[in-house]
Image 1 (cartoon, protein in one colour):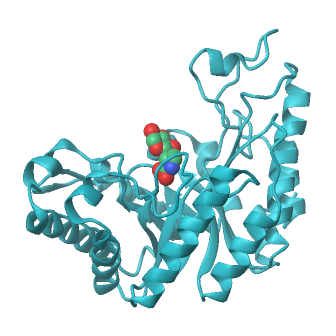
Image 2 (cartoon, protein in one colour):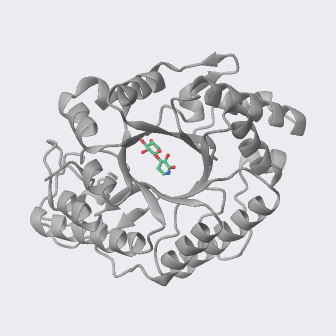
Length: 334
Ligand code: XIL
């Protein structure tokens, strides 16, 4: 099989993976796969607030630098992840940002510092991540996060504006999950995201892309359809790039216990989804949310991983770094 980045590039698509800095440091095979398969990578955790900005005056750039240096040495682009998020916020932020003015300042300083440090090396950023309530059935149901409580809807303009000022060339994204399937909750989320993008565009906020996280589920009868393709066409029509940012497949609902049947169903989820979204011609970036599978301990009992409290998210290479059915499924989808 040719490298996925080459197969994707022939269709004008960037292909890549999220990088875990610990695996990058300790596993040669992991580095080999990244170097061979990817034209873009994103740091899985190191650029999140608690990873990169541990105390008010203490930035921890080392782990992110390692990923960026590795990527650029291998001629791989870097996508940065993420600024405004309700998770991964260290406690000091709420201690320091106690009113609207101080929250605004903390947010702008953080974004400006990180974007400037990687200016010219990181080409794009997830500026806002997961801004809507889970199980959204209403429209404009913004998540009541710390940033929303402090700044209201204004945080979008503040965050995108700061990132744009710090690096006018970077492509700035809104990233979210739950837009992929044909169900009411995903339909509501698609509506929310479209409305948000329309309003940001209308007020001149420098948003350039939308990321569909694409955490998929195998072993359910859920399916993909016009909901997601219509969304992609609409976003594209508005001049926004459309990215698949966190592609993986949760196989804990697959009934079969033998590994081969499980692999078949996981590969099908990858194919069905990529065939659907790539058919629009609007997606120019596909990033898998990791490199290797976790070691699987599927016993006689199906879905045993879930019952052990372990979420199993099969990726495109097995726990030893070998290609599997899913690898071929993705290659064929491009
Ligand atoms: C996850 C990472 O994969 C985990 O290692 C970490 O413990 C928690 O975050 N949506 C996102 C990602 O935008 O940042 C999350 O990544 C998965 C859900």
